Image 1 (tube, rainbow, N blue to C red):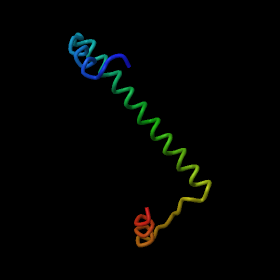
Image 2: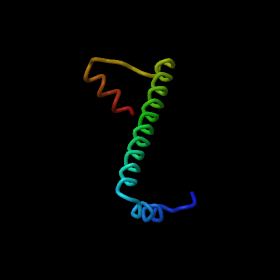
Image 3: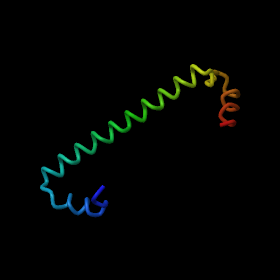
Length: 71
């Protein structure tokens, strides 16, 4: 990246209100996409653990606490 963060912030200050709003919309969309990607990766990791029988299920509260204490 040729600009450092402070330079980018200064450049953003020079934008018009309309351009700043558009940039805000874009950043929100990028953040949403990144979060979706992270959720998908976690889902894939969970599926892998499920197929490898590394996931335990229980409705017993004491058993669940015991499982959590080992993590």
